Every structure is written in C-alpha cells, then in structure tokens.
Amino acid sequence: LVGRALGSVRSASAVSGAIQSALGHHKALAEYVEHYAGLCNPDALHVCDGSEGEYTTFMETMVEDGSMFKLNEAKRPNSYLARSDPRDVARSEESTFISCVNEEDAGPTNNWRDPVEMKATMANLYKDCMVGRTMFVVPFSMGPIGGPISHIGVQLTDSMHVAASMRLMTRMGKAPLEALGTDGEFVKCMHSVGYPLADGKADVAWPCDPDNKYITHYPEENLAESYGSGYGGNSLLGKKAFALRLASAMGKREGWLAEHMLILGVTNPEGKKKYVAAAFPSACGKTNFAMLEPTMPGWKVECVGDDIAWMKFGPDGKLYAINPENGFFGVAPGTSMGTNPNAMRSLDRDCIYTNVAMTADGDVWWEGMTEETPEGMTNWLGEPHNPASNTPAAHPNSRFTVPIANCPVLDPNFEALEGVPIDAIMFGGRRPTTIPLVHEAFSWNHGVLMGASVASEKTAAATGDDIGEIRHDPFAMLPFCGYNMGDYFQHWIDMGKTEGAKLPSMYLVNWFRQDPETGKFIWPGFGENSRVLKWIFERTDGVTDNAAKTPIGYVPTPDALDTDGLAGITNDELTELLRVDPDAWQREINQSDEYLTSTFGPKLPAELKNEIESLKKSF
Ligand code: GDP
Ligand code: PGA
Ligand code: MN
Ligand code: MN
Image (cartoon, rainbow, N blue to C red; front, top):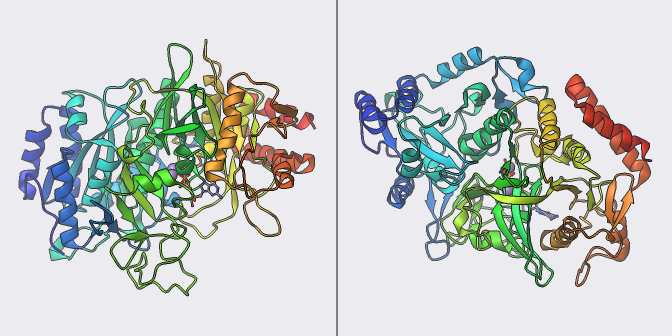
C-alpha cells in the first residue's frame, strides 16, 4: 500500500502555515483546524474543494493503494467497492455518547459522559493519531446552501474514503466554505479512523481501531468527535452525529425538529400533491418507502429524502421539511427491481458500495437482488463465496452510497430553500403481531404518543447479537436523540401548541405482520404500500367516510383500502391486518405505559400520561 499524502502540503511543519493560508480568513475555523491538527499531527493537509476532479483523484488513489475496487466500468460506470474490517460493519450504539454538563440532559436512553472527562479521553486517543496521514478538511452544508433551515458543518478526517463519501452525501467543498464568509457559524465534526502510521507502519485496506471506538457528541458546543470507526453511520458525521444528534438539540433550543424521517411527495391521478414524512427505525423500510413505485395507475411518488428530515413551521402555519442530505446511504440486501426499482436505477452508476459481494465479472450482488445466486462470486470478506453454505455473500448491513441526483424520481422541490409542506406524519416499525397495517391518531398529542410508543425488531443496522428482539425505539430516534428523550417528547407536544399551526395528521403503519404459522410477511409491502399512502392522502384531503373509529384510532373500513389488482393476499388476511384485537391492544398499551413511565418518570409529559389514560379507558 502506498502512503496517503496528497494535497497542498506534505510536511507536518507546513500544516500550520497551510491552515492559515487556506482558512485564516475565518478565525474560528482556522483555530478549530489548528487545534485538532496540533493534537493529531498529520503529515499533510488537504482542504476539499468538492470538485469532480478531486473526487476522481481520491478514487484513483484508493484503487491504487488497494482500499477500493473499481467495478466493471461497462456494468457499473464510475462505481467502487470497499470491504470493511469485519469488526466495523454497523453503527456502534454502545460506543456512542452524549456529553453534556448535566447527566439528566442526556437522559435515560443515552450513554452519558462528563464533557471534561470525555474530551480528555478523546484527546488521548487523538494524540498523534494522524501521523503518516493526511488531514482532510471537509466543509459541507446540510440542506441547500443559504436555506432558512440549512446549516453548515466542517468535518476533519484522516480517511480519504470518508472525504469522498462526504461529497456523495452532502453539498461539500468550496461553496459551503465560501458561504461561511469570515465569521459564519459551523458545526464541528472531528473524525479519525484511529490507525496512525508511525515508524513506517504499513497501512491496511480498512484502517480502524475496533476496540476503541467512540462516537461522542457535545450538544452544548455543536461539536462531535468520532474515533476508531470508518463505518458510514459512525464516520460520515454530517449524517447521524450532526443532522440527528446535534441538530435535535439545536431544534429543541430553537423551536424546530430534526427527525429520523423520510420525506416523499405523493400526487393523485387528478394532479393534487401532498407531502408526507415517515419515521421507521434503521433497516425498517424508509429508503424503500421514500421512492416507491405505486402499484395503482395514475398515482405518483417522488422522493425528497430517505433518512433525515429537518422541519420548521412556515409563515402559513404549515410544517415545512427539508432533507439535509444530498445522497443515499442505503441497505443493499433486499433491494431489487421487484422491491425497489427506483433505488436500483439510482445505483446504476457513481456509487460506493460497502461489504456487498462481487460477481465474477466485476459487478455487485447481494441477497435478494436476483432470485438466483450467481456462480463464482467473491463474498464481502473477499473470499470465494460458497453458494451451498448458509452464510450470506453480502453482509446483512452492506450499504450503497450514491448521490441523490441519481434518483429517477427525485422531487422537483428537493432544492427548495424553504422545504416542502407536510400533510401527514407516519410512524412504523417491524412488528410481527398486534399493530394493524395503518391507523390514524385522534389528535396531535395522541400522535406524539404513537411516536413515543414505537417499538421494532432489532436489525443488522446496529452491532449486537440480539437481532429480531423487539425493543422500544421512540420516534425511531432511540440511537439518535441528542438530549433527554423525555424533553424531546415535551418538545413535540409543545410544537403542537404553536400559534396558528396547521398540524399534519399522524399515522402508525406496520408492513411486517407475520403469519404465526409460516412466519411469512402477510402484507406484500413495497410498491403495494402505495395503497396505504392513498388512504392517508384521502384522510388528509377531508374524506371522512373511509374510516372506522376504534379505541386506538381511525382504521380503514374494509372497502376503504384500494385493493384493485392487489395480489398475493386473501380477503381474510386483509381483514386480519386491519383488525384491532382488544386483548392484544390492552397488553400493548400497558406495555408502552410501563416502558414510558419506568424509563422517563417525571420527564414523561403530563399530556402523554393523559393520552395513555384515555386510551386505557377507551376499551
Ligand atoms: P431503512 O434502513 O429504514 O431505509 O430501510 P430500507 O428501505 O433500506 O429497508 C430495509 C430492509 O427492509 C430491506 O431489506 C428491504 O427490502 C426491507 N423492506 C423495506 N420495505 C419493506 C416492505 O414493505 N415489506 C417488507 N417485507 N420488507 C421491506
Ligand atoms: P437507515 O440509515 O435508517 O437507512 O438504516 C442508516 C442508519 O440508521 O444506521
Ligand atoms: Mn437511518
Ligand atoms: Mn435507508
């Protein structure tokens, strides 16, 4: 492997001068970079301009040093495959911390560390951690540059892979740096893979420090520090660290919302359009739902975002949302022309794949992509794949990273500075029993309880050996809320009291009910989820005779769900999917009550306690 020195300076002593000449016009920015450069001691500095030429140079350099494979240009133009260290394949929730002055402000659902202690721990790890490497300075904007909901960040990293991925996932380089001017505010995102190359130590294809991972956040200082991991969710700090953990705390202070939500536009056959935001936990269907191809003629879905929404009330009282990201970091397994054709089309070119399998002719493959498993593949570990074995060729959390511009159904308002007006908010998760296909909340506060009560089977998106176990995951934000989740519930309640607000309606959906005997998903899902979307569209459009009032909310009447051409499901199954079982639901409500009360105690808002009580009484 060749060294990674690249860019404007190539000696440690020149780094400081380079910082001053490139960034000296912005005193706070130069100080920030000087601070970490002094600590980490990189050999070289590279301030990213975000150009295509720079991206190409990064990719060529990594192909040359063996950390990226160039895929077959005829099959996947401009696309690459990276294989991670097998100990660095998913988000590390146990290594993720919120460091604020008072422990109570981190709340019962976060790992808390005292900021002074945490900074000392991190400074120890950062000391000389970039020896032999280049420090990349990555200015980026979350949201369209200059928009009223957007914010700028500056990531420092010693990973060329991370710098390149930031260009795919954010608006990165010269433009956000210029937008900062001489004193613009920015969020600090510091990252190192934690693999210094001192004393001529050779580099490896995926440097990391698996035993010393830290992803830590200082919400009071708009600072994130990450060490030891190159996995997207741990290292592309614009995404989970900034756009969710730090931004949720900013939103609490400033009166807006940063959420783990997709955003889509849905247009009916008459040409009327509405926007919907939806929170499902990681690997529970956001990317699929965000760009679904409706199975009903005349309906159209367009994608604004597939993972994160920032939302603020507009002057007209409606809640406006932007997608702060500029790319997709999506789960590969299960993605196919049958399930998510628009994702497949987005992946034709310009992609960085991680931990998928490689076919004999230099293309990619993962479980679920095609019915037949191709012969002669290399698995995600770089070994020949044995199709007879039970081990998958692609890691269950293998991912693609691709610019959002590749999406064939990108919404025309994706770049709208003020965002898009939201008519409905959906929550969901993987629930094998009890939760019907869809139901509507009676009110905003009831909807907040729905969000607070989200629970889901654990998936491969986070490390751990308890995949499949049901855990509570309020608002799908359990791993991402940057402050006390009880205060977060209160923030949602308070947002609903905003003077003049025209509040979205709220829904809970479940695509994952299973046949108890066969374990198979009863609802066909994917494009067929458009039928649920249609019902929600009509509900928000003032149709009232399409729902039955049940103790838990409004549920579609048997004929209200459009089933024209719906195949693969019997009428009995459909009735079962929409049924509200009083016994199971009383258990469900008691369970949520028990979880919320015991976890949040006095921080559980009185409004939510009232909602729980009235639900209990409704049976
Ligand atoms: P995200 O991580 O929330 O964005 O979830 P994805 O959209 O990437 O989906 C994660 C996994 O769930 C993939 O393997 C999908 O194929 C699968 N999935 C997504 N939507 C559905 C659905 O409607 N039904 C079923 N059965 N599986 C789904
Ligand atoms: P996901 O995004 O929600 O699409 O899985 C990454 C993550 O949450 O880890
Ligand atoms: Mn996510
Ligand atoms: Mn996704």
